[in-house]
Image 1: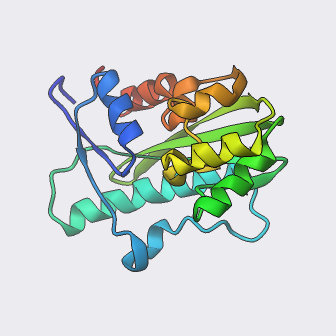
Image 2: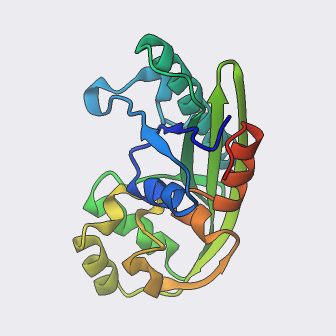
Image 3: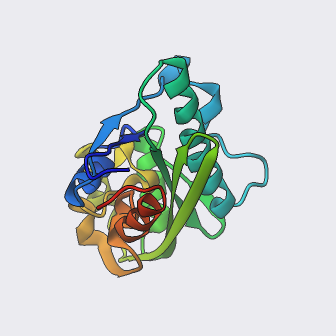
Length: 204
């Protein structure tokens, strides 16, 4: 692939768009249907007994694979399709995005004063070839007062984020310690992503 090559980003996340732009990756958005018409192939419902590590990889790979099928269906130019998924592992439990404000407050109350893992899997697919990388980071929150959680949730920031918080936003005041990839916690581990894209011929 040439220096002018592009990829498709199969994600609605503005954070992932910003992170790809940060490292100079040229991309076009490849969006799936959402809501009641969401595509079955990218169902993010955990399987019975599924572990967080297996879950996040399965979802990321499913999105990338489905993205390549969409290119064929829509007769679009063939470029690598990048997708990602982020989830929290809290004592072996999968914690994704909150359903509503009450759920967000419940999640944050559980995380208060505790350590959790943030798992992000990145998958790239082109034709029949698909590969993935995984980033695991550790985050420890200080103890948060209930009124702090309430004010944070009222800001609206937690509602579209795995674990109901954004490290790059207001939730930074709750974080005592981070071990691992800050960009992975935000939603796209840049070091691992860059290496994966290079394997598909994307020159950064």
